[in-house]
Image (cartoon, rainbow, N blue to C red; front, side, top):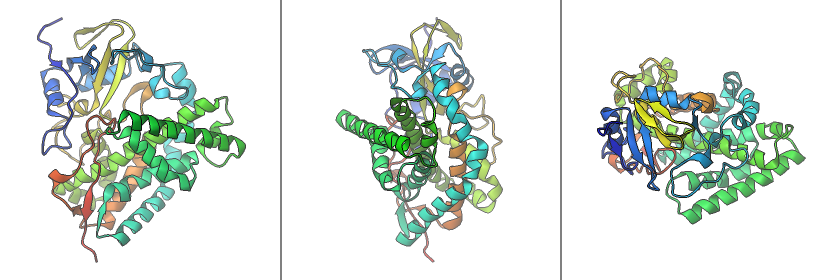
Length: 397
Protein backbone atom coordinates (compact mmCIF):
# COMPACT_ATOMS: atom_id res chain seq x y z
CA UNK A 1 0.00 0.00 0.00
CA UNK A 2 1.44 3.34 -1.01
CA UNK A 3 2.40 5.70 1.79
CA UNK A 4 1.43 8.63 -0.45
CA UNK A 5 -2.27 7.92 -0.01
CA UNK A 6 -4.02 11.03 1.29
CA UNK A 7 -5.54 10.91 4.79
CA UNK A 8 -8.75 12.66 5.85
CA UNK A 9 -8.60 12.90 9.63
CA UNK A 10 -12.25 13.89 10.14
CA UNK A 11 -15.33 14.97 8.28
CA UNK A 12 -15.36 18.77 7.89
CA UNK A 13 -17.77 20.60 10.15
CA UNK A 14 -18.52 23.51 7.81
CA UNK A 15 -18.37 24.60 4.21
CA UNK A 16 -16.13 27.24 2.73
CA UNK A 17 -17.40 30.79 3.29
CA UNK A 18 -19.45 31.99 0.36
CA UNK A 19 -19.77 28.47 -1.14
CA UNK A 20 -22.76 26.89 0.60
CA UNK A 21 -23.57 24.61 -2.33
CA UNK A 22 -20.11 23.12 -2.81
CA UNK A 23 -18.71 20.15 -0.88
CA UNK A 24 -16.39 21.15 1.98
CA UNK A 25 -12.99 22.14 0.62
CA UNK A 26 -11.21 19.30 2.45
CA UNK A 27 -13.33 16.68 0.67
CA UNK A 28 -12.98 18.31 -2.73
CA UNK A 29 -9.22 18.36 -2.15
CA UNK A 30 -9.27 14.69 -1.20
CA UNK A 31 -11.02 13.83 -4.47
CA UNK A 32 -8.46 15.81 -6.46
CA UNK A 33 -5.68 13.82 -4.80
CA UNK A 34 -7.30 10.53 -5.74
CA UNK A 35 -10.67 8.76 -5.43
CA UNK A 36 -9.68 6.79 -2.30
CA UNK A 37 -8.29 8.30 0.93
CA UNK A 38 -7.53 6.95 4.35
CA UNK A 39 -10.00 8.15 6.94
CA UNK A 40 -10.11 8.25 10.74
CA UNK A 41 -13.61 7.68 12.10
CA UNK A 42 -14.77 9.85 15.05
CA UNK A 43 -14.12 7.02 17.48
CA UNK A 44 -10.52 6.76 16.28
CA UNK A 45 -11.12 3.65 14.15
CA UNK A 46 -9.15 3.58 10.88
CA UNK A 47 -11.18 3.42 7.70
CA UNK A 48 -11.36 4.70 4.15
CA UNK A 49 -13.16 7.47 2.31
CA UNK A 50 -14.15 7.15 -1.33
CA UNK A 51 -14.77 10.41 -3.17
CA UNK A 52 -14.73 9.54 -6.90
CA UNK A 53 -17.90 8.83 -8.85
CA UNK A 54 -17.02 5.49 -10.42
CA UNK A 55 -15.75 3.92 -7.20
CA UNK A 56 -18.60 5.24 -5.04
CA UNK A 57 -21.09 3.81 -7.54
CA UNK A 58 -19.30 0.46 -7.68
CA UNK A 59 -19.15 0.08 -3.88
CA UNK A 60 -22.85 0.92 -3.54
CA UNK A 61 -23.62 -2.01 -5.85
CA UNK A 62 -21.01 -4.42 -4.44
CA UNK A 63 -22.44 -7.22 -2.23
CA UNK A 64 -19.02 -7.52 -0.57
CA UNK A 65 -19.88 -4.29 1.26
CA UNK A 66 -22.54 -4.36 3.96
CA UNK A 67 -25.06 -1.78 5.16
CA UNK A 68 -25.65 -3.56 8.45
CA UNK A 69 -25.53 -1.21 11.38
CA UNK A 70 -23.93 -3.68 13.81
CA UNK A 71 -20.97 -4.20 11.47
CA UNK A 72 -20.05 -0.54 11.22
CA UNK A 73 -16.63 0.02 12.72
CA UNK A 74 -16.95 3.75 13.32
CA UNK A 75 -16.89 4.09 17.11
CA UNK A 76 -14.98 2.43 19.94
CA UNK A 77 -17.95 0.30 21.03
CA UNK A 78 -20.18 -2.24 19.32
CA UNK A 79 -23.32 -0.95 17.66
CA UNK A 80 -26.60 -2.86 17.98
CA UNK A 81 -28.40 -4.27 14.94
CA UNK A 82 -30.96 -2.04 13.25
CA UNK A 83 -34.41 -2.21 14.85
CA UNK A 84 -36.99 -4.36 13.05
CA UNK A 85 -38.22 -2.75 9.85
CA UNK A 86 -35.42 -0.19 9.46
CA UNK A 87 -34.24 -1.84 6.26
CA UNK A 88 -31.77 0.85 5.16
CA UNK A 89 -29.35 -0.62 7.69
CA UNK A 90 -29.80 -4.24 6.59
CA UNK A 91 -28.48 -6.58 3.89
CA UNK A 92 -30.19 -9.31 1.93
CA UNK A 93 -32.39 -11.22 2.50
CA UNK A 94 -33.78 -9.12 5.36
CA UNK A 95 -33.60 -5.97 3.28
CA UNK A 96 -35.78 -7.33 0.45
CA UNK A 97 -38.30 -8.79 2.88
CA UNK A 98 -39.13 -5.24 3.97
CA UNK A 99 -38.55 -3.36 0.73
CA UNK A 100 -40.25 -5.67 -1.78
CA UNK A 101 -43.82 -5.12 -0.50
CA UNK A 102 -43.24 -1.36 -0.79
CA UNK A 103 -41.84 -1.21 -4.32
CA UNK A 104 -45.21 -1.50 -6.05
CA UNK A 105 -46.58 1.32 -3.93
CA UNK A 106 -43.92 3.83 -5.07
CA UNK A 107 -43.78 3.21 -8.82
CA UNK A 108 -43.48 6.00 -11.38
CA UNK A 109 -47.10 5.44 -12.39
CA UNK A 110 -48.48 5.58 -8.85
CA UNK A 111 -46.47 8.68 -8.00
CA UNK A 112 -47.62 10.46 -11.14
CA UNK A 113 -51.20 9.74 -10.13
CA UNK A 114 -50.47 11.85 -7.04
CA UNK A 115 -49.51 14.87 -9.16
CA UNK A 116 -52.90 16.56 -8.94
CA UNK A 117 -53.00 16.24 -5.15
CA UNK A 118 -49.41 17.54 -4.86
CA UNK A 119 -50.35 20.50 -7.06
CA UNK A 120 -53.28 21.22 -4.73
CA UNK A 121 -51.12 21.02 -1.59
CA UNK A 122 -48.48 23.25 -3.18
CA UNK A 123 -51.07 25.82 -4.25
CA UNK A 124 -52.52 25.94 -0.73
CA UNK A 125 -49.05 26.55 0.74
CA UNK A 126 -48.34 29.29 -1.80
CA UNK A 127 -51.76 30.88 -1.16
CA UNK A 128 -51.01 31.09 2.55
CA UNK A 129 -47.50 32.39 1.87
CA UNK A 130 -48.80 35.08 -0.48
CA UNK A 131 -51.53 36.19 1.92
CA UNK A 132 -49.03 36.50 4.79
CA UNK A 133 -46.35 38.14 2.62
CA UNK A 134 -44.57 39.84 0.97
CA UNK A 135 -41.89 38.23 3.13
CA UNK A 136 -41.67 34.66 4.34
CA UNK A 137 -39.36 31.96 5.60
CA UNK A 138 -39.47 29.59 2.65
CA UNK A 139 -38.51 26.65 4.87
CA UNK A 140 -41.54 26.84 7.15
CA UNK A 141 -43.99 28.24 4.58
CA UNK A 142 -43.14 26.02 1.62
CA UNK A 143 -40.29 23.52 1.83
CA UNK A 144 -41.40 21.60 4.92
CA UNK A 145 -45.20 21.60 4.66
CA UNK A 146 -45.41 20.14 1.14
CA UNK A 147 -43.48 16.86 1.68
CA UNK A 148 -44.81 16.56 5.23
CA UNK A 149 -48.44 16.63 4.09
CA UNK A 150 -47.74 14.32 1.15
CA UNK A 151 -45.92 11.58 3.06
CA UNK A 152 -48.36 11.79 5.96
CA UNK A 153 -51.28 11.29 3.57
CA UNK A 154 -49.53 8.35 1.91
CA UNK A 155 -48.99 6.68 5.28
CA UNK A 156 -52.28 7.77 6.80
CA UNK A 157 -51.02 10.10 9.55
CA UNK A 158 -54.01 12.14 10.79
CA UNK A 159 -53.93 15.81 9.86
CA UNK A 160 -53.81 17.00 13.45
CA UNK A 161 -50.65 14.99 14.17
CA UNK A 162 -48.51 16.36 11.35
CA UNK A 163 -47.03 19.38 13.07
CA UNK A 164 -45.76 17.40 16.06
CA UNK A 165 -44.40 14.70 13.74
CA UNK A 166 -42.47 17.32 11.77
CA UNK A 167 -40.98 18.73 14.97
CA UNK A 168 -39.83 15.29 16.12
CA UNK A 169 -38.19 14.47 12.77
CA UNK A 170 -36.49 17.89 12.81
CA UNK A 171 -35.14 17.18 16.27
CA UNK A 172 -33.34 13.94 15.48
CA UNK A 173 -32.28 14.72 11.90
CA UNK A 174 -31.28 18.37 12.20
CA UNK A 175 -27.78 17.71 13.53
CA UNK A 176 -27.97 20.08 16.50
CA UNK A 177 -29.95 18.27 19.19
CA UNK A 178 -28.27 17.07 22.36
CA UNK A 179 -28.13 13.36 23.13
CA UNK A 180 -31.01 13.82 25.55
CA UNK A 181 -33.09 15.66 22.94
CA UNK A 182 -32.33 13.00 20.34
CA UNK A 183 -33.45 10.22 22.67
CA UNK A 184 -36.59 12.13 23.63
CA UNK A 185 -37.55 12.83 20.00
CA UNK A 186 -36.85 9.26 18.91
CA UNK A 187 -38.82 7.83 21.85
CA UNK A 188 -41.76 10.14 21.19
CA UNK A 189 -41.78 9.18 17.51
CA UNK A 190 -41.65 5.46 18.35
CA UNK A 191 -44.51 5.82 20.79
CA UNK A 192 -46.56 7.72 18.25
CA UNK A 193 -45.91 5.16 15.51
CA UNK A 194 -46.93 2.35 17.86
CA UNK A 195 -50.28 4.06 18.36
CA UNK A 196 -50.63 4.68 14.63
CA UNK A 197 -49.93 1.05 13.73
CA UNK A 198 -52.46 -0.13 16.31
CA UNK A 199 -55.06 2.28 14.90
CA UNK A 200 -54.49 1.04 11.33
CA UNK A 201 -54.84 -2.58 12.41
CA UNK A 202 -58.09 -1.82 14.17
CA UNK A 203 -59.55 0.49 11.50
CA UNK A 204 -57.70 0.33 8.15
CA UNK A 205 -57.99 3.35 5.88
CA UNK A 206 -56.89 4.08 2.32
CA UNK A 207 -53.13 4.41 2.87
CA UNK A 208 -49.89 2.45 2.59
CA UNK A 209 -49.60 1.62 6.30
CA UNK A 210 -53.09 0.13 6.37
CA UNK A 211 -52.23 -1.98 3.32
CA UNK A 212 -49.09 -3.26 5.05
CA UNK A 213 -51.06 -4.44 8.08
CA UNK A 214 -52.54 -7.15 5.83
CA UNK A 215 -49.11 -8.76 5.49
CA UNK A 216 -47.00 -10.76 7.92
CA UNK A 217 -45.16 -7.82 9.50
CA UNK A 218 -45.22 -7.46 13.27
CA UNK A 219 -46.14 -4.18 14.91
CA UNK A 220 -42.45 -3.54 15.66
CA UNK A 221 -41.57 -4.09 12.02
CA UNK A 222 -44.33 -1.75 10.85
CA UNK A 223 -43.05 0.91 13.24
CA UNK A 224 -39.57 0.64 11.72
CA UNK A 225 -40.84 0.73 8.15
CA UNK A 226 -43.01 3.76 8.94
CA UNK A 227 -40.10 5.59 10.54
CA UNK A 228 -37.91 5.07 7.48
CA UNK A 229 -40.63 6.23 5.09
CA UNK A 230 -41.65 9.23 7.17
CA UNK A 231 -38.11 10.48 7.79
CA UNK A 232 -36.88 9.89 4.24
CA UNK A 233 -40.07 11.18 2.65
CA UNK A 234 -39.98 14.41 4.59
CA UNK A 235 -36.42 15.50 5.38
CA UNK A 236 -34.62 14.99 2.08
CA UNK A 237 -37.29 16.60 -0.08
CA UNK A 238 -37.81 19.49 2.32
CA UNK A 239 -34.13 20.34 2.23
CA UNK A 240 -33.96 19.94 -1.56
CA UNK A 241 -36.83 22.41 -1.97
CA UNK A 242 -35.27 25.02 0.31
CA UNK A 243 -31.63 24.62 -0.70
CA UNK A 244 -32.63 24.25 -4.36
CA UNK A 245 -34.51 27.55 -4.26
CA UNK A 246 -31.50 29.19 -2.61
CA UNK A 247 -29.25 27.85 -5.39
CA UNK A 248 -31.59 29.12 -8.09
CA UNK A 249 -31.77 32.56 -6.52
CA UNK A 250 -27.97 32.64 -6.46
CA UNK A 251 -27.87 31.71 -10.15
CA UNK A 252 -30.21 34.29 -11.70
CA UNK A 253 -29.37 33.34 -15.29
CA UNK A 254 -30.40 29.75 -14.65
CA UNK A 255 -33.51 30.86 -12.78
CA UNK A 256 -34.51 33.14 -15.66
CA UNK A 257 -34.08 30.29 -18.14
CA UNK A 258 -36.23 28.00 -16.02
CA UNK A 259 -38.90 30.65 -15.58
CA UNK A 260 -39.03 31.22 -19.34
CA UNK A 261 -39.09 27.56 -20.36
CA UNK A 262 -41.25 25.10 -18.41
CA UNK A 263 -39.73 22.28 -20.48
CA UNK A 264 -36.54 22.74 -18.45
CA UNK A 265 -38.27 21.69 -15.22
CA UNK A 266 -37.44 17.98 -15.33
CA UNK A 267 -33.80 18.65 -16.18
CA UNK A 268 -33.61 21.33 -13.51
CA UNK A 269 -34.71 18.86 -10.85
CA UNK A 270 -32.04 16.33 -11.89
CA UNK A 271 -29.33 18.99 -12.03
CA UNK A 272 -30.23 20.38 -8.62
CA UNK A 273 -30.17 16.86 -7.19
CA UNK A 274 -26.66 16.35 -8.60
CA UNK A 275 -25.37 19.81 -7.75
CA UNK A 276 -26.59 19.85 -4.15
CA UNK A 277 -26.48 16.16 -3.11
CA UNK A 278 -28.16 16.87 0.22
CA UNK A 279 -27.71 13.23 1.32
CA UNK A 280 -23.97 13.71 1.58
CA UNK A 281 -22.48 10.42 2.72
CA UNK A 282 -23.20 6.74 3.26
CA UNK A 283 -21.29 4.05 5.15
CA UNK A 284 -20.47 0.54 4.01
CA UNK A 285 -18.42 -2.17 5.76
CA UNK A 286 -16.24 -4.67 3.89
CA UNK A 287 -17.35 -8.26 4.46
CA UNK A 288 -14.07 -9.59 3.08
CA UNK A 289 -10.76 -8.17 1.91
CA UNK A 290 -11.51 -6.01 -1.14
CA UNK A 291 -9.30 -3.96 -3.46
CA UNK A 292 -10.89 -0.63 -4.36
CA UNK A 293 -9.08 1.86 -6.53
CA UNK A 294 -5.82 0.02 -5.98
CA UNK A 295 -6.16 0.13 -2.19
CA UNK A 296 -6.66 -2.99 -0.08
CA UNK A 297 -9.62 -2.62 2.29
CA UNK A 298 -9.57 -5.25 5.02
CA UNK A 299 -12.65 -7.18 6.08
CA UNK A 300 -14.46 -5.39 8.90
CA UNK A 301 -13.32 -1.92 7.78
CA UNK A 302 -15.99 0.73 7.30
CA UNK A 303 -15.72 3.11 4.37
CA UNK A 304 -17.36 6.52 3.98
CA UNK A 305 -18.86 7.11 0.54
CA UNK A 306 -18.94 10.82 -0.30
CA UNK A 307 -21.86 11.32 -2.67
CA UNK A 308 -21.48 15.07 -2.94
CA UNK A 309 -17.90 14.83 -4.20
CA UNK A 310 -18.83 11.91 -6.47
CA UNK A 311 -21.55 14.05 -8.04
CA UNK A 312 -18.97 16.79 -8.61
CA UNK A 313 -16.36 14.48 -10.13
CA UNK A 314 -14.87 16.14 -13.26
CA UNK A 315 -14.07 12.71 -14.67
CA UNK A 316 -17.82 12.09 -14.87
CA UNK A 317 -19.38 15.54 -15.29
CA UNK A 318 -18.21 18.46 -17.43
CA UNK A 319 -17.73 21.63 -15.35
CA UNK A 320 -19.21 19.84 -12.33
CA UNK A 321 -19.14 22.90 -10.04
CA UNK A 322 -21.40 24.84 -12.41
CA UNK A 323 -25.18 24.70 -12.03
CA UNK A 324 -26.37 24.03 -15.58
CA UNK A 325 -30.08 23.27 -15.87
CA UNK A 326 -29.58 22.21 -19.49
CA UNK A 327 -27.02 19.57 -18.56
CA UNK A 328 -27.97 16.18 -20.05
CA UNK A 329 -28.99 13.76 -17.30
CA UNK A 330 -26.05 11.40 -16.73
CA UNK A 331 -26.78 9.17 -13.80
CA UNK A 332 -26.10 11.20 -10.64
CA UNK A 333 -25.94 9.39 -7.30
CA UNK A 334 -28.21 11.71 -5.32
CA UNK A 335 -30.61 8.82 -4.73
CA UNK A 336 -27.76 6.36 -4.07
CA UNK A 337 -27.34 3.23 -6.20
CA UNK A 338 -27.73 -0.53 -5.91
CA UNK A 339 -30.25 -2.33 -3.73
CA UNK A 340 -30.57 0.64 -1.39
CA UNK A 341 -31.36 3.17 -4.11
CA UNK A 342 -34.02 5.49 -2.73
CA UNK A 343 -37.42 3.83 -2.73
CA UNK A 344 -39.21 7.19 -2.84
CA UNK A 345 -37.16 8.83 -5.59
CA UNK A 346 -40.11 9.07 -7.99
CA UNK A 347 -42.22 10.71 -5.32
CA UNK A 348 -39.44 13.21 -4.58
CA UNK A 349 -39.10 14.03 -8.27
CA UNK A 350 -42.83 14.70 -8.66
CA UNK A 351 -42.87 16.91 -5.56
CA UNK A 352 -39.87 18.92 -6.75
CA UNK A 353 -41.16 19.33 -10.31
CA UNK A 354 -44.51 20.59 -9.09
CA UNK A 355 -43.20 22.75 -6.24
CA UNK A 356 -40.33 24.51 -8.04
CA UNK A 357 -42.52 25.24 -11.06
CA UNK A 358 -45.37 26.61 -8.98
CA UNK A 359 -43.09 28.73 -6.82
CA UNK A 360 -41.31 30.53 -9.64
CA UNK A 361 -44.55 31.02 -11.58
CA UNK A 362 -46.39 32.43 -8.58
CA UNK A 363 -43.59 34.78 -7.49
CA UNK A 364 -41.71 36.13 -10.54
CA UNK A 365 -39.88 38.67 -8.38
CA UNK A 366 -38.88 36.22 -5.64
CA UNK A 367 -35.53 37.08 -4.06
CA UNK A 368 -33.60 36.71 -0.83
CA UNK A 369 -34.67 39.04 1.97
CA UNK A 370 -31.19 38.93 3.56
CA UNK A 371 -27.65 38.85 2.15
CA UNK A 372 -26.75 35.34 0.98
CA UNK A 373 -24.02 35.12 3.62
CA UNK A 374 -26.62 35.50 6.37
CA UNK A 375 -28.70 32.48 5.28
CA UNK A 376 -28.43 29.97 8.12
CA UNK A 377 -27.21 26.55 7.01
CA UNK A 378 -27.72 23.20 8.63
CA UNK A 379 -24.51 21.90 10.21
CA UNK A 380 -22.43 19.30 8.38
CA UNK A 381 -23.22 16.95 11.28
CA UNK A 382 -26.81 16.70 10.01
CA UNK A 383 -27.52 13.58 7.96
CA UNK A 384 -29.16 15.76 5.32
CA UNK A 385 -27.66 19.12 4.34
CA UNK A 386 -29.84 22.18 3.85
CA UNK A 387 -30.81 25.56 5.24
CA UNK A 388 -32.37 26.22 8.62
CA UNK A 389 -34.33 29.14 7.26
CA UNK A 390 -34.53 30.99 3.95
CA UNK A 391 -35.95 34.51 4.28
CA UNK A 392 -37.41 35.62 0.96
CA UNK A 393 -39.43 38.54 -0.33
CA UNK A 394 -41.21 39.57 -3.50
CA UNK A 395 -43.01 42.54 -4.99
CA UNK A 396 -46.62 42.57 -3.86
CA UNK A 397 -49.12 43.46 -6.56
